[in-house]
Length: 196
Image (cartoon, rainbow, N blue to C red):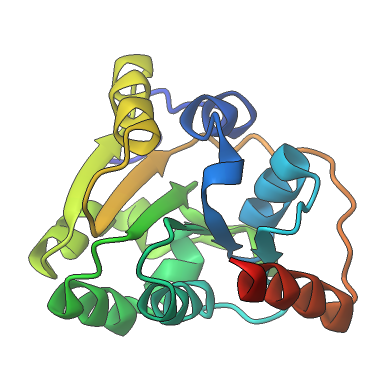
C-alpha cells in the first residue's frame, strides 16, 4: 500500500489521539520526526528519552528498559526508517515475549532524518506483517476508526509485545525545538528510572 492509494493520517492529529496519557509509560523515542512528535506532546518530561543522531537505537534501548523494568509499561515511538534499521530487535522482542512493551511505528514511508528519501515501506514492505512474523501482536492504523481502536489498545494496555503501525502522510512533525544535550537528557531519564 502506498500513499497514492489512500489518504493517510496527519501525525500532528493522530499521535495525541493515540497517546492520551503519556505519564503512565517510560517512553523511548527514535530520532527526527518521532522525537519532535513526542517532545512536543510531553515537553520532554522526565519519563521520556529522545534519541538524536543514533538511527536504529530506539527499539533495542526499549527492549533493554522493558527487561530491566518488568513492572513498568514501556512505550517505544519510532519511525519506519529507524525500525527498518533494527529489524533484528523485533525478532528478539518477539522471542523474549516482552509483555510490557508497546511500539508505535510512525510510518511516513520516508527517511525524514536524512533528507526525506523513500523508505522501503513506500515500496510495499509491511512492518506490521514483519512484526507479526516475529511474534508481536500488531495493529495497522490507516483510518480514523483504526486510530480509535488503537487508542483503546494503548490506553487499556494489555500484555504485549504490541506494534502499532501508524501510517501518516508527508505532513511535517510539530515545530518543536528539543534539548540536544545528550548528557542532560540521559541523566534526567536515568534519575527518573532509578526512582521507580
